[in-house]
Image (cartoon, rainbow, N blue to C red; front, side, top):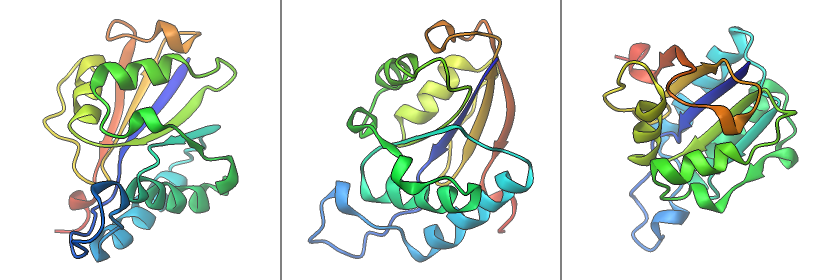
Length: 165
């Protein structure tokens, strides 16, 4: 059994025109939502054995909050450049390259690729993964290169606006 947590980076700030898209930091709301969602998952007993992130500043900053909540060594965070502006197909390729010794993987990336990827694998469609939204999928597969929509099940879909109105 393989378990995958797809996390869209938290809300980013557009206040710094001099920064590239890649460099944008988290906004105030992003800095509120990321630790909240990380704690929510931690309280549910989620414990990833591998965390992979796009190297974009907003994705890494989001992943840092999750590392802290899970007592996961931030230095062990795996930065995957292919996840920045990745399509569904590119995300699938990244996931299929994960070593099979890892069973619970958390992946931080961007839309629209992340939502497209979730919909590619899920039995029911996710309209949109909002910022700091999380889709959890279980796969009845022994290897990451065997995952498909034929052996997947959505476990949950969480996002901050469920809790902050």
